[in-house]
Length: 278
Image (tube, rainbow, N blue to C red; front, side):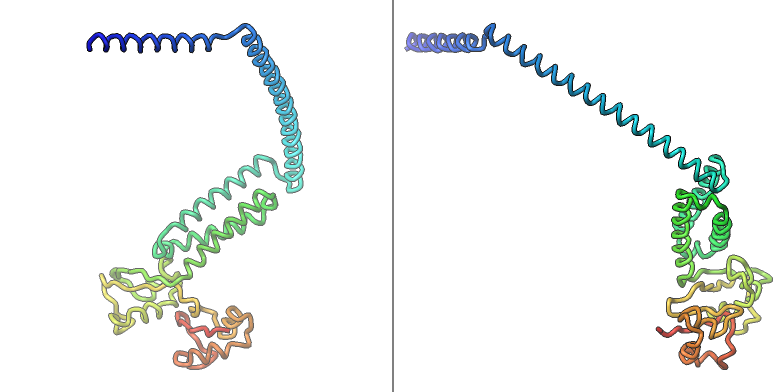
């Protein structure tokens, strides 16, 4: 039995060696195969070099076109700058100024409503600065016009947010009264708006002439979309012209607010009027 096993193992080894030898023989490259492969590689190399040369030529053409386009652009920019009587340095400075304003406005836009309300003076100042810049001829340059359009869009968003109803707290200090509080820039910047403070805090103010240190007053800002906050100089026909584009519709506002309007021609700052739909 042992001899039989050893004999079988020897036969298996012999067959394996024979198969490996045959495989080696099959893998052996002939001279003809070598010549054919070299010819194929040479042909592929020539085609690749031709493609590289063609690509280099196309790149050179594109570079030339880019250079010509840049020259044309520079010439056009020079003509535009000459049209607005400005130098390249002046235009660059103008653009940086607009970028700075944009950054400031975007920073304000990120603030919480109650914080934004208290900094509405900054919005007003920046809006005035933008209006001044629009008077400069440089603002007509396409790049500047795009920047200004973006600024106008952000200002519109800020204006809409400031107009939305929001309430902040105010802690009364010694010497304060409703008139002086309403006069503060961070409140209404208008002393005649004191009645709004009084109405918003009737639960703790019995006499509008008597408030006390450390009292916390609610300071409302803005009104709902269907309301109008009366300010000095307002009349019903003027409000109607603003909201309806028709001063003749003042009576609609009067009818909706009869409870707080004694006479149609007599309304007061800080009144919040309901505005019926048109």
